[in-house]
Length: 289
Ligand code: UTP
Image (tube, rainbow, N blue to C red):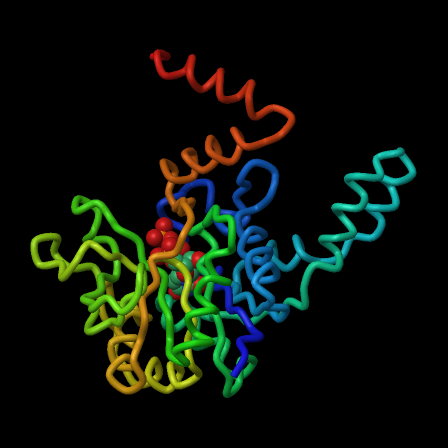
């Protein structure tokens, strides 16, 4: 079956970014000139997925407002002769068929994904965590969809994580079946670093079968008292198998200030107009105190 839908959970507290995230979700923090959630929507579209389901919190409508068409803005820009930016605004107006579902309480990622159950229905779907922005020649999700097409089982994106940070991730024990592709044998959420089964940590891209919903409904809260997607994956892998892909690309964790700043620098330096100048300024900054 083809994957046609992507769920983007964006209802978290964003505590690592407080106080900035008191009034708006971290998914709207800008990476250069676009909110990080837009990179997630664009990755889904570039991977051939046109139906986007965004999970939002009941406390703010800011994400919905951002993607709402603003035809008057494009008209204004055009009347001022700024056709290029007007085109960009119109592209955003048409961007995607976005459906919003509300997560009434922040009970964890597994619970956030569960909120999309009715809209997803009985078909496989993708999950994109928008704070993990991946810069890749071929979108990471598209790479994973190829694995799903050939294996017809769930796929998670994994990356080699430094041992000092492995305790913050879901970690997989695997057997390798092809270059950069592994069959998952077991997984554990936020292991003690010394007990981590490998250095392969799950990052924010998943392709899941709809059976995940009934599993999430049946599991108790796990690490941190939250309903963890990783715990549901542990159950699902025993029933249907699960693959882990070391995708080709570079991931930035924009959900915390250091990762976000690193991403700003990396994406800024790629800018055609001011990238070179910025690179030089950043070089000078290395001796700034
Ligand atoms: P994070 O683990 O980054 O959690 O969630 P968080 O609460 O947003 O941020 P911190 O750790 O407090 O700083 C990963 C993704 O899952 C969403 C978040 O919005 C983010 O995109 N999420 C998390 C939900 O939608 N609902 C939840 O209950 C938890």
